[in-house]
Amino acid sequence: MHFTLATGVVLSVFLAQQHQHGQGAEQLGTVKFETSCTAAAQAPFTRGLALLHSFEFGPAIDSFTAAAAADPGCAIANWGVALAHWGNPFAPGIKPAKAIQAGNAAVAAAKKAGARTEREQAFIAAVANLYTDGETVNQRTRVLAYRDAMKQVAASYANDPEASAFYALALASSQDPADMSYASLLEAGQILERLAPAQPDHPGLAHYIIHSYDAPPLAAKALEAARRYAKIAPSAPHALHMPSHTFTRLGYWKDSIDSNIASAAEAKRLKVAFEELHAMDYQMYAYLQLAQDASAKRLLDTLNASRERLDAPSIAGAAPPLAGAYATAAIPARFVLERRAWADAAALEVRPSPYGNAEGVTWFAKGIGSAKTKDVDGARRAVAALDQIAAKLDQSGEKYWAEQVRIQQLGVRAWLALAEGKSDDALAVLREAADREDKTEKAPVTPGPILPAREQLGEMLLELKQPQAALEAFEITLKKEPNRFRALAGAMEAERQVKKAAAGSSRYAAMLAKLTANADGPARPELAALKTGGRE
Image 1 (cartoon, rainbow, N blue to C red):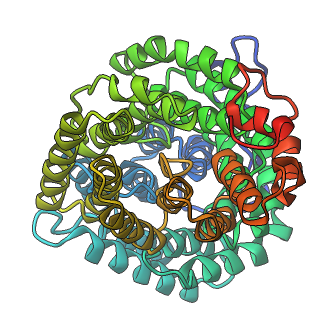
Image 2: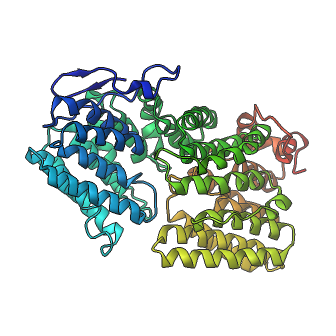
Image 3: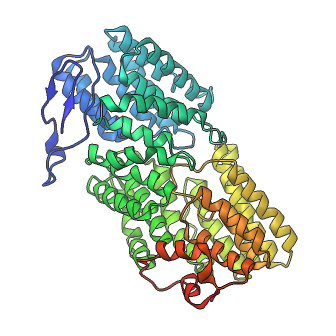
Protein backbone atom coordinates (compact mmCIF):
# COMPACT_ATOMS: atom_id res chain seq x y z
CA MET A 1 0.00 0.00 0.00
CA HIS A 2 1.41 3.39 -0.87
CA PHE A 3 0.31 6.85 0.18
CA THR A 4 1.95 10.23 -0.29
CA LEU A 5 1.48 13.39 1.74
CA ALA A 6 1.83 16.86 0.29
CA THR A 7 4.79 17.29 2.60
CA GLY A 8 6.65 14.75 0.47
CA VAL A 9 6.74 12.08 3.17
CA VAL A 10 6.09 8.66 1.62
CA LEU A 11 4.17 6.52 4.06
CA SER A 12 5.06 2.89 4.52
CA VAL A 13 2.62 0.06 4.87
CA PHE A 14 -0.06 0.86 7.45
CA LEU A 15 -2.40 -1.82 8.74
CA ALA A 16 -1.56 -3.88 5.65
CA GLN A 17 -1.80 -7.01 7.74
CA GLN A 18 -5.56 -6.50 7.69
CA HIS A 19 -5.49 -7.09 3.97
CA GLN A 20 -2.74 -9.56 3.35
CA HIS A 21 -3.93 -13.13 4.03
CA GLY A 22 -1.66 -14.20 1.21
CA GLN A 23 -2.82 -11.37 -1.03
CA GLY A 24 0.22 -9.09 -0.65
CA ALA A 25 0.24 -5.49 0.55
CA GLU A 26 -2.90 -3.39 0.34
CA GLN A 27 -3.02 -1.27 -2.83
CA LEU A 28 -5.35 1.70 -2.79
CA GLY A 29 -3.52 4.22 -4.95
CA THR A 30 -1.66 7.42 -4.13
CA VAL A 31 -3.34 10.44 -2.54
CA LYS A 32 -2.05 13.83 -1.38
CA PHE A 33 -3.83 15.92 1.24
CA GLU A 34 -2.02 18.45 3.39
CA THR A 35 -3.23 18.47 6.99
CA SER A 36 -2.31 20.13 10.26
CA CYS A 37 -2.46 16.79 12.10
CA THR A 38 0.45 15.31 13.99
CA ALA A 39 2.76 12.78 12.36
CA ALA A 40 1.07 9.93 14.25
CA ALA A 41 -2.28 10.78 12.65
CA GLN A 42 -1.02 11.21 9.09
CA ALA A 43 -0.80 7.55 8.09
CA PRO A 44 -4.32 6.52 9.18
CA PHE A 45 -5.77 9.77 7.81
CA THR A 46 -4.23 9.24 4.39
CA ARG A 47 -5.29 5.59 4.28
CA GLY A 48 -8.81 6.72 5.17
CA LEU A 49 -8.73 9.27 2.37
CA ALA A 50 -7.65 6.66 -0.20
CA LEU A 51 -10.44 4.35 0.96
CA LEU A 52 -12.95 7.21 0.85
CA HIS A 53 -12.01 7.96 -2.76
CA SER A 54 -12.92 4.36 -3.64
CA PHE A 55 -16.15 4.48 -1.62
CA GLU A 56 -14.93 1.88 0.89
CA PHE A 57 -16.77 3.73 3.62
CA GLY A 58 -16.56 1.34 6.58
CA PRO A 59 -12.77 0.90 6.46
CA ALA A 60 -12.41 4.63 5.77
CA ILE A 61 -14.32 5.47 8.95
CA ASP A 62 -12.08 3.09 10.90
CA SER A 63 -8.93 4.79 9.58
CA PHE A 64 -10.21 8.32 10.13
CA THR A 65 -11.26 7.35 13.66
CA ALA A 66 -7.74 6.00 14.28
CA ALA A 67 -6.31 9.33 13.09
CA ALA A 68 -8.56 11.27 15.47
CA ALA A 69 -7.53 8.98 18.33
CA ALA A 70 -3.84 9.52 17.54
CA ASP A 71 -4.35 13.31 17.46
CA PRO A 72 -7.51 14.62 19.18
CA GLY A 73 -6.88 17.95 17.46
CA CYS A 74 -7.02 16.38 13.99
CA ALA A 75 -10.42 17.85 13.20
CA ILE A 76 -10.14 17.04 9.51
CA ALA A 77 -10.25 13.35 10.41
CA ASN A 78 -13.79 13.86 11.69
CA TRP A 79 -14.59 15.58 8.38
CA GLY A 80 -13.61 12.30 6.73
CA VAL A 81 -15.86 10.36 9.08
CA ALA A 82 -18.77 12.69 8.28
CA LEU A 83 -18.35 12.39 4.52
CA ALA A 84 -18.01 8.61 4.76
CA HIS A 85 -21.28 8.33 6.69
CA TRP A 86 -23.07 9.93 3.73
CA GLY A 87 -22.25 6.80 1.74
CA ASN A 88 -22.41 6.53 -2.02
CA PRO A 89 -23.51 9.97 -3.24
CA PHE A 90 -24.70 8.50 -6.56
CA ALA A 91 -27.14 6.09 -4.94
CA PRO A 92 -30.64 7.53 -5.43
CA GLY A 93 -32.81 7.43 -2.36
CA ILE A 94 -33.22 9.12 0.99
CA LYS A 95 -30.34 8.58 3.39
CA PRO A 96 -31.40 6.67 6.53
CA ALA A 97 -31.85 8.56 9.80
CA LYS A 98 -29.00 6.57 11.35
CA ALA A 99 -26.56 7.91 8.75
CA ILE A 100 -27.76 11.49 9.32
CA GLN A 101 -27.29 11.12 13.07
CA ALA A 102 -23.81 9.67 12.66
CA GLY A 103 -22.83 12.39 10.19
CA ASN A 104 -24.08 15.12 12.51
CA ALA A 105 -22.09 13.62 15.37
CA ALA A 106 -18.93 13.58 13.24
CA VAL A 107 -19.44 17.21 12.24
CA ALA A 108 -19.93 18.14 15.88
CA ALA A 109 -16.73 16.29 16.79
CA ALA A 110 -14.83 18.12 14.05
CA LYS A 111 -16.05 21.49 15.29
CA LYS A 112 -15.22 20.60 18.88
CA ALA A 113 -11.70 19.50 17.91
CA GLY A 114 -11.13 22.91 16.34
CA ALA A 115 -9.55 22.84 12.90
CA ARG A 116 -6.14 24.47 12.93
CA THR A 117 -6.33 26.01 9.44
CA GLU A 118 -8.93 27.98 7.54
CA ARG A 119 -8.77 25.40 4.74
CA GLU A 120 -9.70 22.55 7.08
CA GLN A 121 -12.45 24.69 8.58
CA ALA A 122 -13.83 25.22 5.08
CA PHE A 123 -13.97 21.47 4.33
CA ILE A 124 -15.76 20.87 7.64
CA ALA A 125 -18.24 23.69 7.10
CA ALA A 126 -19.02 22.33 3.63
CA VAL A 127 -19.78 18.79 4.74
CA ALA A 128 -22.03 20.09 7.52
CA ASN A 129 -24.50 21.14 4.81
CA LEU A 130 -25.33 17.48 4.15
CA TYR A 131 -26.53 16.94 7.70
CA THR A 132 -27.67 20.23 9.25
CA ASP A 133 -31.44 20.28 9.76
CA GLY A 134 -31.69 16.85 8.16
CA GLU A 135 -35.05 16.29 9.80
CA THR A 136 -36.62 19.45 8.38
CA VAL A 137 -34.74 20.39 5.18
CA ASN A 138 -35.23 18.05 2.22
CA GLN A 139 -32.26 16.05 1.03
CA ARG A 140 -32.00 17.60 -2.43
CA THR A 141 -31.68 21.08 -0.92
CA ARG A 142 -28.90 19.91 1.39
CA VAL A 143 -27.05 18.14 -1.44
CA LEU A 144 -27.09 21.31 -3.54
CA ALA A 145 -25.93 23.37 -0.56
CA TYR A 146 -22.98 21.01 -0.12
CA ARG A 147 -22.18 21.23 -3.83
CA ASP A 148 -22.20 25.02 -3.72
CA ALA A 149 -20.05 25.08 -0.59
CA MET A 150 -17.49 22.79 -2.20
CA LYS A 151 -17.46 25.03 -5.25
CA GLN A 152 -16.41 27.88 -2.97
CA VAL A 153 -13.76 25.73 -1.28
CA ALA A 154 -12.34 24.76 -4.67
CA ALA A 155 -12.29 28.41 -5.76
CA SER A 156 -10.65 29.58 -2.53
CA TYR A 157 -7.96 26.88 -2.73
CA ALA A 158 -7.48 26.67 -6.47
CA ASN A 159 -4.10 24.96 -6.10
CA ASP A 160 -5.54 22.17 -3.94
CA PRO A 161 -6.43 19.20 -6.20
CA GLU A 162 -8.38 17.51 -3.38
CA ALA A 163 -10.71 20.49 -3.08
CA SER A 164 -11.32 20.39 -6.83
CA ALA A 165 -11.78 16.61 -6.83
CA PHE A 166 -14.38 16.70 -4.07
CA TYR A 167 -16.15 19.59 -5.78
CA ALA A 168 -16.27 17.61 -9.03
CA LEU A 169 -17.69 14.64 -7.12
CA ALA A 170 -20.36 16.85 -5.54
CA LEU A 171 -21.16 18.32 -8.94
CA ALA A 172 -21.48 14.97 -10.70
CA SER A 173 -23.49 13.31 -7.93
CA SER A 174 -25.96 16.21 -7.80
CA GLN A 175 -26.80 15.86 -11.51
CA ASP A 176 -30.56 15.82 -12.01
CA PRO A 177 -31.46 12.39 -13.50
CA ALA A 178 -33.95 14.13 -15.78
CA ASP A 179 -31.38 16.57 -17.21
CA MET A 180 -30.49 15.04 -20.55
CA SER A 181 -27.98 17.83 -21.29
CA TYR A 182 -25.68 16.22 -18.71
CA ALA A 183 -24.32 19.69 -17.92
CA SER A 184 -23.14 18.89 -14.39
CA LEU A 185 -21.58 15.61 -15.46
CA LEU A 186 -19.66 17.25 -18.28
CA GLU A 187 -18.39 20.05 -16.06
CA ALA A 188 -17.26 17.56 -13.42
CA GLY A 189 -15.52 15.42 -16.00
CA GLN A 190 -13.61 18.39 -17.36
CA ILE A 191 -12.36 19.33 -13.89
CA LEU A 192 -11.20 15.78 -13.23
CA GLU A 193 -9.52 15.39 -16.60
CA ARG A 194 -7.46 18.51 -15.89
CA LEU A 195 -6.29 17.04 -12.59
CA ALA A 196 -5.58 13.47 -13.71
CA PRO A 197 -2.28 13.89 -15.65
CA ALA A 198 -0.46 15.22 -12.58
CA GLN A 199 -1.76 12.36 -10.36
CA PRO A 200 -2.10 9.26 -12.54
CA ASP A 201 -2.35 6.93 -9.52
CA HIS A 202 -5.03 8.92 -7.69
CA PRO A 203 -7.99 6.56 -7.09
CA GLY A 204 -10.63 9.27 -6.83
CA LEU A 205 -9.81 10.98 -10.11
CA ALA A 206 -10.18 7.80 -12.18
CA HIS A 207 -13.21 6.76 -10.14
CA TYR A 208 -15.05 10.06 -10.49
CA ILE A 209 -14.30 10.35 -14.21
CA ILE A 210 -16.16 7.06 -14.70
CA HIS A 211 -19.12 8.38 -12.71
CA SER A 212 -19.05 11.73 -14.49
CA TYR A 213 -19.37 10.05 -17.86
CA ASP A 214 -21.76 7.31 -16.77
CA ALA A 215 -24.40 8.20 -19.37
CA PRO A 216 -24.99 6.73 -22.84
CA PRO A 217 -23.62 9.59 -24.97
CA LEU A 218 -20.66 10.24 -22.64
CA ALA A 219 -19.43 6.76 -21.75
CA ALA A 220 -16.63 6.56 -24.34
CA LYS A 221 -14.96 9.52 -22.63
CA ALA A 222 -14.48 7.37 -19.51
CA LEU A 223 -12.89 4.36 -21.20
CA GLU A 224 -9.27 5.28 -20.46
CA ALA A 225 -10.08 5.87 -16.78
CA ALA A 226 -12.03 2.62 -16.67
CA ARG A 227 -9.02 0.72 -17.99
CA ARG A 228 -6.80 2.29 -15.27
CA TYR A 229 -8.92 2.35 -12.13
CA ALA A 230 -8.78 -1.34 -11.23
CA LYS A 231 -4.99 -1.26 -11.57
CA ILE A 232 -4.73 1.79 -9.31
CA ALA A 233 -6.69 0.35 -6.36
CA PRO A 234 -7.07 -3.43 -6.76
CA SER A 235 -7.60 -3.85 -3.01
CA ALA A 236 -10.92 -2.00 -3.21
CA PRO A 237 -13.82 -4.16 -4.45
CA HIS A 238 -15.51 -1.07 -5.86
CA ALA A 239 -12.44 -0.17 -7.90
CA LEU A 240 -12.61 -3.61 -9.47
CA HIS A 241 -16.32 -3.21 -10.20
CA MET A 242 -16.56 0.42 -11.25
CA PRO A 243 -15.00 0.02 -14.73
CA SER A 244 -17.94 -2.21 -15.62
CA HIS A 245 -20.20 0.86 -15.52
CA THR A 246 -18.37 2.13 -18.58
CA PHE A 247 -18.12 -1.32 -20.16
CA THR A 248 -21.88 -1.78 -19.72
CA ARG A 249 -22.65 1.57 -21.33
CA LEU A 250 -20.52 0.59 -24.32
CA GLY A 251 -21.70 -3.01 -24.58
CA TYR A 252 -18.27 -4.47 -23.73
CA TRP A 253 -19.73 -7.52 -22.05
CA LYS A 254 -16.61 -9.67 -21.67
CA ASP A 255 -14.80 -6.78 -19.98
CA SER A 256 -17.75 -6.30 -17.66
CA ILE A 257 -17.82 -9.99 -16.73
CA ASP A 258 -14.12 -10.02 -15.93
CA SER A 259 -14.40 -6.87 -13.80
CA ASN A 260 -17.31 -8.19 -11.80
CA ILE A 261 -15.87 -11.66 -11.24
CA ALA A 262 -12.86 -9.96 -9.65
CA SER A 263 -14.98 -7.49 -7.68
CA ALA A 264 -17.37 -10.14 -6.32
CA ALA A 265 -14.46 -12.33 -5.23
CA GLU A 266 -12.73 -9.47 -3.38
CA ALA A 267 -16.02 -8.33 -1.82
CA LYS A 268 -16.71 -11.87 -0.65
CA ARG A 269 -13.25 -12.12 0.89
CA LEU A 270 -13.73 -8.82 2.72
CA LYS A 271 -17.30 -9.77 3.72
CA VAL A 272 -18.90 -6.83 1.89
CA ALA A 273 -22.09 -8.64 0.88
CA PHE A 274 -23.89 -5.71 -0.76
CA GLU A 275 -20.92 -5.06 -3.04
CA GLU A 276 -20.68 -8.76 -3.90
CA LEU A 277 -24.33 -8.92 -4.95
CA HIS A 278 -24.09 -5.66 -6.86
CA ALA A 279 -21.19 -7.07 -8.89
CA MET A 280 -23.14 -10.28 -9.49
CA ASP A 281 -26.07 -8.32 -10.93
CA TYR A 282 -23.81 -6.59 -13.45
CA GLN A 283 -22.19 -9.95 -14.21
CA MET A 284 -25.57 -11.62 -14.81
CA TYR A 285 -26.64 -8.82 -17.14
CA ALA A 286 -23.47 -9.23 -19.22
CA TYR A 287 -23.70 -13.04 -19.45
CA LEU A 288 -27.25 -12.77 -20.76
CA GLN A 289 -26.32 -10.31 -23.49
CA LEU A 290 -23.72 -12.81 -24.78
CA ALA A 291 -26.28 -15.64 -24.60
CA GLN A 292 -23.97 -17.37 -22.15
CA ASP A 293 -26.98 -18.84 -20.43
CA ALA A 294 -25.19 -21.79 -18.85
CA SER A 295 -22.76 -19.40 -17.19
CA ALA A 296 -25.69 -17.24 -16.11
CA LYS A 297 -27.39 -20.27 -14.59
CA ARG A 298 -24.27 -21.18 -12.62
CA LEU A 299 -24.20 -17.63 -11.25
CA LEU A 300 -27.89 -17.81 -10.38
CA ASP A 301 -27.25 -21.03 -8.47
CA THR A 302 -24.87 -19.16 -6.14
CA LEU A 303 -27.42 -16.48 -5.31
CA ASN A 304 -28.85 -18.09 -2.18
CA ALA A 305 -25.41 -18.47 -0.61
CA SER A 306 -24.57 -14.85 -1.44
CA ARG A 307 -27.95 -13.66 -0.13
CA GLU A 308 -27.31 -15.42 3.17
CA ARG A 309 -24.15 -13.37 3.65
CA LEU A 310 -26.35 -10.28 3.93
CA ASP A 311 -27.08 -11.41 7.49
CA ALA A 312 -23.39 -11.61 8.39
CA PRO A 313 -21.45 -8.63 9.78
CA SER A 314 -20.56 -6.45 6.80
CA ILE A 315 -18.09 -3.63 6.34
CA ALA A 316 -19.88 -0.78 4.59
CA GLY A 317 -18.72 -0.45 1.00
CA ALA A 318 -19.79 1.52 -2.04
CA ALA A 319 -22.94 -0.52 -2.57
CA PRO A 320 -25.64 0.47 -0.05
CA PRO A 321 -28.09 -2.08 1.42
CA LEU A 322 -30.50 -1.17 -1.38
CA ALA A 323 -27.98 -2.50 -3.91
CA GLY A 324 -27.96 -5.90 -2.23
CA ALA A 325 -31.75 -6.04 -2.04
CA TYR A 326 -32.10 -4.87 -5.63
CA ALA A 327 -29.59 -7.42 -6.91
CA THR A 328 -31.27 -10.35 -5.16
CA ALA A 329 -34.49 -9.47 -6.98
CA ALA A 330 -32.94 -8.43 -10.29
CA ILE A 331 -30.67 -11.44 -10.85
CA PRO A 332 -33.47 -14.07 -11.08
CA ALA A 333 -35.77 -11.62 -12.90
CA ARG A 334 -33.17 -10.93 -15.57
CA PHE A 335 -32.44 -14.63 -15.98
CA VAL A 336 -36.02 -15.50 -16.88
CA LEU A 337 -37.03 -12.39 -18.81
CA GLU A 338 -33.99 -12.10 -21.07
CA ARG A 339 -34.47 -15.75 -22.04
CA ARG A 340 -38.24 -15.37 -22.49
CA ALA A 341 -38.98 -18.01 -19.90
CA TRP A 342 -42.42 -16.52 -19.30
CA ALA A 343 -43.86 -19.29 -17.12
CA ASP A 344 -40.78 -19.15 -14.88
CA ALA A 345 -41.15 -15.39 -14.66
CA ALA A 346 -44.79 -15.70 -13.59
CA ALA A 347 -43.74 -18.19 -10.89
CA LEU A 348 -41.06 -16.01 -9.27
CA GLU A 349 -41.38 -15.60 -5.51
CA VAL A 350 -41.77 -12.07 -4.19
CA ARG A 351 -39.45 -11.71 -1.22
CA PRO A 352 -40.49 -9.07 1.34
CA SER A 353 -38.02 -6.20 1.40
CA PRO A 354 -37.72 -2.84 3.10
CA TYR A 355 -37.00 -1.48 -0.37
CA GLY A 356 -40.15 -1.24 -2.46
CA ASN A 357 -38.25 -0.87 -5.72
CA ALA A 358 -36.61 -4.26 -5.12
CA GLU A 359 -40.02 -5.90 -4.63
CA GLY A 360 -41.16 -4.00 -7.70
CA VAL A 361 -38.58 -5.78 -9.84
CA THR A 362 -40.08 -9.16 -9.00
CA TRP A 363 -43.66 -7.99 -9.47
CA PHE A 364 -42.68 -6.56 -12.85
CA ALA A 365 -41.20 -9.89 -13.95
CA LYS A 366 -44.23 -11.79 -12.60
CA GLY A 367 -46.59 -9.42 -14.35
CA ILE A 368 -44.86 -9.70 -17.73
CA GLY A 369 -44.68 -13.48 -17.38
CA SER A 370 -48.34 -13.70 -16.42
CA ALA A 371 -49.49 -11.53 -19.32
CA LYS A 372 -47.36 -13.48 -21.80
CA THR A 373 -48.86 -16.78 -20.59
CA LYS A 374 -52.41 -15.30 -20.75
CA ASP A 375 -52.82 -15.36 -16.97
CA VAL A 376 -54.71 -12.08 -16.87
CA ASP A 377 -55.55 -12.39 -13.17
CA GLY A 378 -51.87 -12.79 -12.33
CA ALA A 379 -51.01 -9.77 -14.45
CA ARG A 380 -53.71 -7.71 -12.75
CA ARG A 381 -52.32 -8.65 -9.34
CA ALA A 382 -48.91 -7.45 -10.47
CA VAL A 383 -50.35 -4.15 -11.71
CA ALA A 384 -52.07 -3.59 -8.35
CA ALA A 385 -48.93 -4.47 -6.39
CA LEU A 386 -46.78 -2.12 -8.46
CA ASP A 387 -49.33 0.66 -7.98
CA GLN A 388 -49.16 0.22 -4.20
CA ILE A 389 -45.36 0.15 -4.22
CA ALA A 390 -45.14 3.35 -6.28
CA ALA A 391 -47.57 5.12 -3.95
CA LYS A 392 -45.53 4.14 -0.87
CA LEU A 393 -42.31 5.27 -2.52
CA ASP A 394 -43.93 8.60 -3.33
CA GLN A 395 -45.11 9.01 0.25
CA SER A 396 -41.60 8.37 1.59
CA GLY A 397 -40.06 10.95 -0.74
CA GLU A 398 -38.48 8.42 -3.10
CA LYS A 399 -39.69 10.20 -6.24
CA TYR A 400 -37.07 8.71 -8.57
CA TRP A 401 -37.85 5.12 -7.65
CA ALA A 402 -41.59 5.78 -7.65
CA GLU A 403 -41.29 6.83 -11.29
CA GLN A 404 -39.25 3.75 -12.20
CA VAL A 405 -41.88 1.48 -10.63
CA ARG A 406 -44.64 3.32 -12.49
CA ILE A 407 -42.80 2.75 -15.76
CA GLN A 408 -42.66 -0.96 -14.90
CA GLN A 409 -46.37 -0.93 -14.10
CA LEU A 410 -47.10 0.62 -17.49
CA GLY A 411 -45.15 -2.21 -19.11
CA VAL A 412 -47.22 -4.85 -17.35
CA ARG A 413 -50.44 -2.98 -18.13
CA ALA A 414 -49.49 -2.89 -21.80
CA TRP A 415 -48.87 -6.62 -22.09
CA LEU A 416 -52.03 -7.28 -20.07
CA ALA A 417 -54.01 -5.17 -22.54
CA LEU A 418 -52.52 -7.11 -25.44
CA ALA A 419 -53.44 -10.40 -23.75
CA GLU A 420 -57.01 -9.07 -23.52
CA GLY A 421 -57.05 -8.26 -27.23
CA LYS A 422 -56.79 -4.47 -26.78
CA SER A 423 -53.88 -3.88 -29.12
CA ASP A 424 -54.39 -0.12 -29.57
CA ASP A 425 -54.50 0.41 -25.81
CA ALA A 426 -51.48 -1.83 -25.36
CA LEU A 427 -49.36 0.18 -27.81
CA ALA A 428 -50.47 3.51 -26.33
CA VAL A 429 -49.55 2.45 -22.80
CA LEU A 430 -46.20 0.97 -23.81
CA ARG A 431 -45.32 4.10 -25.80
CA GLU A 432 -46.01 6.13 -22.66
CA ALA A 433 -43.70 3.84 -20.68
CA ALA A 434 -40.94 4.20 -23.28
CA ASP A 435 -41.27 7.99 -23.43
CA ARG A 436 -41.11 8.28 -19.65
CA GLU A 437 -38.13 5.95 -19.39
CA ASP A 438 -36.29 7.97 -22.05
CA LYS A 439 -36.63 11.07 -19.86
CA THR A 440 -34.71 9.66 -16.88
CA GLU A 441 -31.30 8.08 -16.43
CA LYS A 442 -30.82 4.67 -14.88
CA ALA A 443 -29.50 4.55 -11.33
CA PRO A 444 -25.95 3.23 -10.80
CA VAL A 445 -27.46 0.47 -8.65
CA THR A 446 -28.47 -1.32 -11.86
CA PRO A 447 -26.65 -2.07 -15.11
CA GLY A 448 -29.82 -1.27 -17.00
CA PRO A 449 -33.61 -1.58 -16.98
CA ILE A 450 -34.84 -5.10 -16.30
CA LEU A 451 -36.37 -4.89 -19.79
CA PRO A 452 -36.03 -1.54 -21.62
CA ALA A 453 -39.48 -0.15 -22.31
CA ARG A 454 -38.70 0.87 -25.89
CA GLU A 455 -37.31 -2.59 -26.60
CA GLN A 456 -40.59 -4.03 -25.29
CA LEU A 457 -42.39 -1.67 -27.65
CA GLY A 458 -40.40 -3.06 -30.56
CA GLU A 459 -41.32 -6.61 -29.61
CA MET A 460 -44.99 -5.73 -29.29
CA LEU A 461 -44.94 -4.01 -32.68
CA LEU A 462 -43.42 -7.16 -34.18
CA GLU A 463 -46.21 -9.24 -32.69
CA LEU A 464 -48.72 -6.83 -34.23
CA LYS A 465 -47.11 -7.12 -37.68
CA GLN A 466 -45.68 -3.59 -37.74
CA PRO A 467 -42.03 -4.36 -38.53
CA GLN A 468 -40.98 -0.90 -39.73
CA ALA A 469 -42.12 0.76 -36.51
CA ALA A 470 -40.58 -2.13 -34.56
CA LEU A 471 -37.24 -1.64 -36.29
CA GLU A 472 -37.25 2.03 -35.36
CA ALA A 473 -37.92 1.16 -31.71
CA PHE A 474 -35.10 -1.38 -31.61
CA GLU A 475 -32.67 1.04 -33.23
CA ILE A 476 -33.47 3.73 -30.66
CA THR A 477 -32.92 1.17 -27.91
CA LEU A 478 -29.53 0.21 -29.31
CA LYS A 479 -28.33 3.82 -29.27
CA LYS A 480 -28.89 3.90 -25.51
CA GLU A 481 -28.17 0.25 -24.72
CA PRO A 482 -25.59 -0.93 -27.31
CA ASN A 483 -25.10 -4.64 -27.96
CA ARG A 484 -28.24 -5.73 -26.14
CA PHE A 485 -29.13 -9.23 -27.30
CA ARG A 486 -32.90 -8.73 -27.35
CA ALA A 487 -32.70 -5.43 -29.23
CA LEU A 488 -30.28 -6.83 -31.82
CA ALA A 489 -32.38 -9.96 -32.31
CA GLY A 490 -35.53 -7.87 -32.61
CA ALA A 491 -33.91 -5.51 -35.11
CA MET A 492 -32.72 -8.49 -37.15
CA GLU A 493 -36.21 -9.95 -37.32
CA ALA A 494 -37.87 -6.61 -38.00
CA GLU A 495 -35.49 -5.84 -40.84
CA ARG A 496 -36.02 -9.33 -42.27
CA GLN A 497 -39.76 -8.71 -42.34
CA VAL A 498 -39.42 -5.22 -43.84
CA LYS A 499 -37.14 -6.45 -46.60
CA LYS A 500 -38.86 -9.83 -46.90
CA ALA A 501 -35.42 -11.45 -46.78
CA ALA A 502 -33.72 -14.19 -44.81
CA ALA A 503 -32.68 -13.28 -41.26
CA GLY A 504 -29.07 -13.95 -42.10
CA SER A 505 -29.12 -11.19 -44.69
CA SER A 506 -29.92 -8.49 -42.11
CA ARG A 507 -27.13 -6.10 -41.16
CA TYR A 508 -27.99 -6.93 -37.55
CA ALA A 509 -27.44 -10.64 -38.14
CA ALA A 510 -23.67 -10.21 -38.37
CA MET A 511 -23.70 -8.12 -35.20
CA LEU A 512 -25.72 -10.75 -33.35
CA ALA A 513 -23.53 -13.58 -34.61
CA LYS A 514 -20.39 -11.77 -33.47
CA LEU A 515 -21.92 -10.91 -30.11
CA THR A 516 -22.86 -14.54 -29.42
CA ALA A 517 -19.79 -16.25 -30.85
CA ASN A 518 -19.13 -17.79 -27.43
CA ALA A 519 -22.73 -18.50 -26.45
CA ASP A 520 -22.77 -21.53 -24.19
CA GLY A 521 -26.32 -22.73 -24.67
CA PRO A 522 -28.83 -24.07 -24.64
CA ALA A 523 -29.23 -22.33 -28.00
CA ARG A 524 -31.77 -19.53 -28.07
CA PRO A 525 -34.40 -19.51 -30.83
CA GLU A 526 -33.07 -16.21 -32.15
CA LEU A 527 -29.70 -17.81 -32.85
CA ALA A 528 -31.34 -20.68 -34.66
CA ALA A 529 -33.12 -18.07 -36.80
CA LEU A 530 -29.74 -16.93 -38.08
CA LYS A 531 -29.46 -20.28 -39.86
CA THR A 532 -33.07 -20.98 -40.79
CA GLY A 533 -33.91 -17.53 -42.15
CA GLY A 534 -36.64 -16.58 -39.71
CA ARG A 535 -37.96 -16.88 -36.19
CA GLU A 536 -38.22 -20.36 -34.75
